[in-house]
Amino acid sequence: MTKRQHLHGRKNRRLFFEQFEDRRMLDATPWTNPALAEDVDSDTFVTGTDAHIIVEMLIASGGQPVTVPMEGVGPPFPDVDGDGMVGVGDWEESVTC
Image (cartoon, rainbow, N blue to C red; front, top):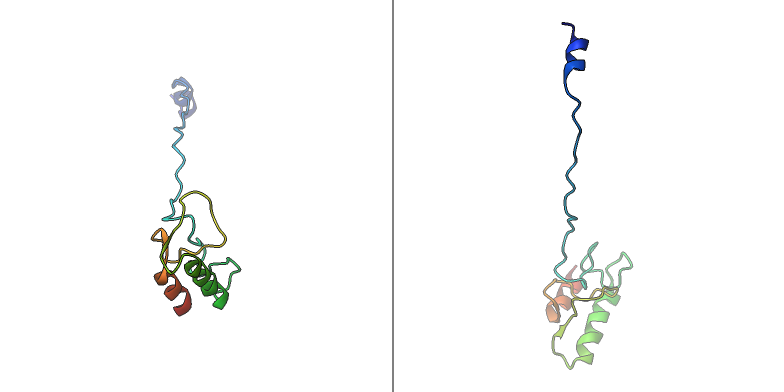
């Protein structure tokens, strides 16, 4: 029996492909810039303007940390450290970068 005869003697098999569920990376918060956390205004540069945005938010809240909503998305991206709050720690990280 030749190789060709052997292959033709096999039953035809169908290929089945299993479709997996969609997998996406989950962010800690949608208010953290995924490209560069310290870039609050998403202009691709980390400048004093980024820190100023956070300071203005803190002044508006009377100096208290601000909870960011889990729905929606920036810019601005004021949650630099990704803890779900905008506070002094976010300002410090944006200034020291």
